[in-house]
Image 1 (cartoon, rainbow, N blue to C red):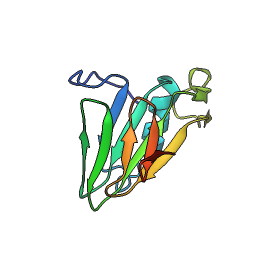
Image 2 (cartoon, helix red, strand yellow; image 1 turned 120 degrees about the vertical axis):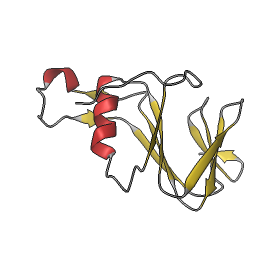
Image 3 (cartoon, one colour; image 1 turned 180 degrees about the vertical axis):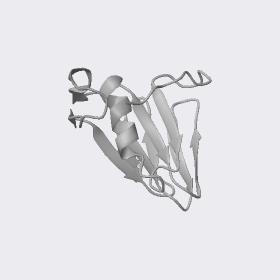
Image 4 (tube, helix red, strand yellow; image 1 turned 90 degrees about the vertical axis):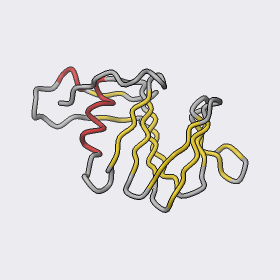
Length: 117
């Protein structure tokens, strides 16, 4: 089970986490979604940066990858399980973005060659 704390309040309903792949944090993230449905996360790997514009567009910089997970429709059995039990988490949307790719925080869609995907 994971506890969340408020950030700086710059972006609403958004989790930003680093070292995602290197530290194998998918289980950590899924427990966050299970207990807080509706969140969106931007998971940063090594050698990566993102720019987030005032319009809500995320652009991937550098050579690493960014994982974006949309928990808007997540369904889980989080509140039926005890600490240490395996959770069921379903209906999350998972995207992996390489350098130069963009993601629209408002529509929650990846932008591929100028077109939403």
